[in-house]
Length: 370
Image 1 (cartoon, rainbow, N blue to C red):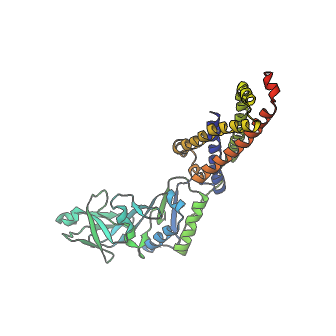
Image 2: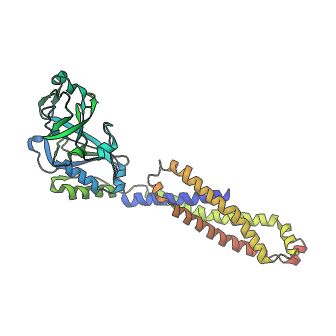
Image 3: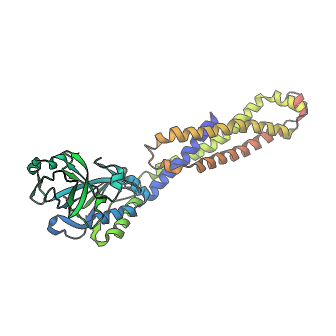
């Protein structure tokens, strides 16, 4: 039990230190959302100077850790089509550094990640009832009416052909939808209510590192066309509390190692008759020390390693819900280093204790029952 507690405390101490060391260094905001705002006044209050190509290039510039924290990216574009006079395309997606994912679930990741010009439509556009479909854009005060495209395999969007890959959309999903990757061009993003062109939501509170990463990427890829509003990102307020937890955990680890040596010394006192028999039968002090040390290592080290494995597979995933960065602190090499540190420190403490115990007991004293 002593070895198990020692292993758990040592693993947890390091993990919590790395978790809150990261939080203290980076700080965090109280926001899980961010806007990219155009800097120039959009023409006709519809389109902005920020383009789809600028946004896609910005995503390519972001660090993997920033991309992992992004929950969704939302934006839109108003373009002329052969199915409607104009169409307000809405994009809601994520990008993990390798592939895209459509949050509307209309396109597969493979389709969304390609640069092919593809589109999904409502089946009604293939029937005479298409002309009964009307869309009202309150933001620009226009009504757009559908057109019967018949058996056409394509829809023209901004004078370019888009292949129809899905014709089962509902009106709730929108009569037309296309991936933003199909518009890797100078297609302008529309101005949304609130004055933003891109809205980004996050899984957890935005950190200083992630915020700076986005600001730098926007500056590189969008230049003077857009900016990211300032955010209040300050260090956590309970630093003292967490540093205290770290100190206590480290102190407990030291006491646990020392306690193991004291407990084993008590075991040796109970086994004084065994020591007497071995010594009377000619067993040297050096050999007795090796026997006791081997006994301790055989019992302690495998148990410590097993506890590390249980901690990694069962306990750590549960802690991740409370300590956001704790899982990033561990690696196979780190577990090996902690095992080695425990093995060396235990060996030194136990060796000193066993040498002192055996050396103090001479054969004459053992014969007398001392």
